[in-house]
Image 1 (tube, rainbow, N blue to C red):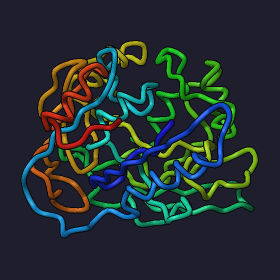
Image 2 (spheres, rainbow, N blue to C red):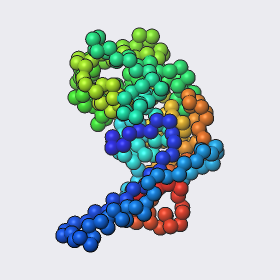
Image 3 (cartoon, rainbow, N blue to C red):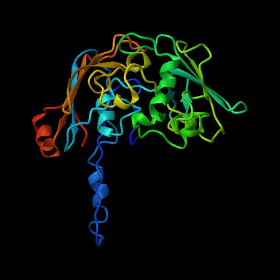
Length: 295
């Protein structure tokens, strides 16, 4: 992904300007960029977060958003932006992107045994109130590795998990290297690897998936129809701070608080993100139509 997926939702707005010149330089203009840069504040003011209210966000795009609201199936940054408010990964990280145990699941590595143990915390629930389970973690690998789903997320790095390549090639109906010690409805998953790789403790390492998919909700949808299913495109489930309330396909999405969010009540009442044409972006800024616009 070009951007990291948001964990606990917060609004971070950063403005940056890059002034670059090409061609011959002269002594009189060599410091012009530095002088202009000084006009921008070095830090933005901070304030105590307010409770309640709503914000509107503009997503600049020439085309409608595809609307594939699944980490395992989406290959569009616009989709990721639209679902960011409800979408949350399994793990939290420190400032160096090292995985810690402060997120939705804990993480334990055993290099000698060539395993990674993931345990979803009790009370981490989908936006329909169902506990996130071991099967949800395992199911996300099935979606990625099953050729019928046409996921672009399958990689040779993920294939380091024992049995994933065999499942992908149709030689096995199960992924042998994904163990659920307490059963599908438990919360613990043990991943078995062929080799342990450097950087496995860092988020985004690519050797294991860091999300889960709602098996109880999607299990009746054939892999070949997941991408086109309303359960993915119109009524997706997430376990993040917000849940999807209203969708105008390709154009806008409205998010409200997820009452089952494991970290507690989100501060904002509502978030609305809408597509705008690049041609109308400057006018939207002038008219203050949106609270946030990524330019």
